[in-house]
Length: 237
Image 1: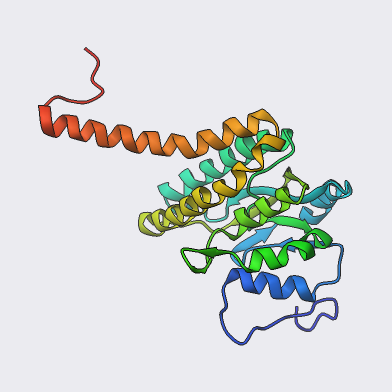
Image 2: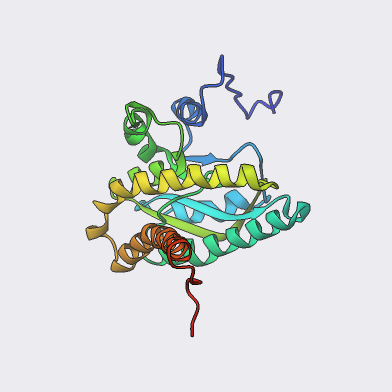
């Protein structure tokens, strides 16, 4: 690609993280659209052709494609993650898009309106968490900023991107913890948006955040019951 005159390869002096790398590239870009692709992702040949029509509507600020597990056949875990991605895209994101607001345009395959990004970059770059510059949750935070600016976000199921997923439990759990931190942190920003969005999205956001907490509370309560009373929790008589 470096020998192709259509490409401009930007090499940063050191690893500054995804967010700063994104910002450096966006500020050097000139096109109307910016396509974000993670380094472990392969796009179908027609992804851009499928995503761009959504962006012809000036009210749309971003759109994401459908994710699949590129290494689906590695293990039982990767097959489950591939199923999880299908559900997350074709049920959750599809339903959100029906009401005009995909709450997180995922990094492996997302296209943004550059003019909208340019107005949001300072906010995106200056996000802090617990007194330090944020180094996680870039995709969700950028989507929330786009929605705050009044743009719609969309999902395009026919734009397929295959991304590498964790094939061992340890890396998968660390990834999920990082994503969960992002979800709960940026939900606080998203709550201010909900009155202006469809009521379904309020139900969806509340369910996403309360569901895991209630499940954790149920498990802890069951363990406490077992330890204190010797009875098996959740057992119907």
